Amino acid sequence: MHRLGPAKLRRRHSPGIAVIISQQCNLTCGYCLAKQGTFGLNVANMKKAEVTTRIESLFEANPDIDFIKFFGGEPTLRIDLIKGICDFVENKLKKRVHFALTTNGTLAASRHLDLWQRYHVSVSVTVDGPPHVHDAVRTRADGRGSHASAVAYCRDLAAANFPFAVVGVFDERHLRSGMSYLDMIKYLNEIAPLSKVQFLESLGDAASHEMGEEPLQMARAQVVEAVDAIMEAMTSAFISPNDGRWLYDNNIFRFIYGIVRETALPYEHACTASNLTTIFPSGELMACYTFAEKSTSAYGSKWTSKTELEDRRQEFRAAHKWEAMAARGTRVPWYRGVVGDICVADMLNSSGGLEQSAFYKAFQETATLRILQWMPVVAKDPVAVARVLHAMEQHKIITGEYTLKMSRDFTAAQGA
Image (cartoon, rainbow, N blue to C red; front, side):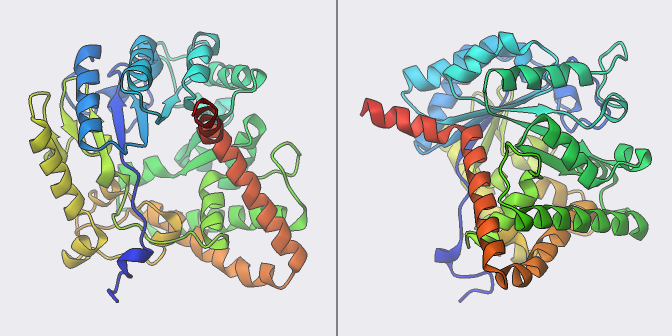
């Protein structure tokens, strides 16, 4: 047995495509990983003919592509191109994939809803908390905040019974305002039952590995508080998304799901970048969009042949297997099977070789350990076990509704 586990006990990331649909954005968020959509690259205008040609060639190389994600900039600024790509993939290529995007919700949902419904698009709306927190960073060019429009977008989707996720970045703004990680979860749950907190991601990216012990201790304490609150909620009652006891963060729930349902097997590769191909408006191709300014992740340009592109993809995949990374001195996190992805782009920020940023590690390691500490307590009470299993089933249902895989599978079966 290899020290990283036998191959048959490892998972593989689903193959997918990320399309940087637009390099423009109508917000000027200070923490923007994408640098308002430029990703530090030359700005170009994506052309439908070029991107659909490349998508077709990627499907020829890998017919099992499972998802296409639209990124920006603000992707809904090119709603015409999103529609064109969805139509091309489903009606020209006859492929059924999972379409997904994240929007800032600044444009009217009524302009998008028909498209989201027609192509079963998984939509995430970014809300960073209450107005005084959200609007401190997520501003328009004229300085006005975007909180009101983002929440209105969510309300319009909810009114149409369209499943969506609400996603928020939790960082120093929240800590300064006295808002805890648990407070953030509760706030997002008021907007949607399916929520996800990007815990201190901007601090982790911006400050990398140079943070002191005091903020790390605060981060760990807040993770423990949130895990405890969620575990207490799900062991004290049979909670469901439509009742007031529902307390949900997708990160924590999926960690619990992996442990409870025994699906927490390590991935063969470190993160989704291993099986992702990103297409930029210029025609440049690389692994994950988070590697945009890292030349080592470049696969080629719009002139790169299908064969050469696939060769470079496989080279990248081989280099980012855990075995290969461990051989180069990377420390393999013990909790990787539970949390799934260990972002390689985040690890590249380290000056001492590949390792996670301190905040990113603090969240994943602390959450996993605290959940494991809860398991023996839960196991002693059959009713608590039943309640946790019920909560995990609810998690499976709402994430299934979000991705709409159930309805898509049903539609496919009906047409068979």
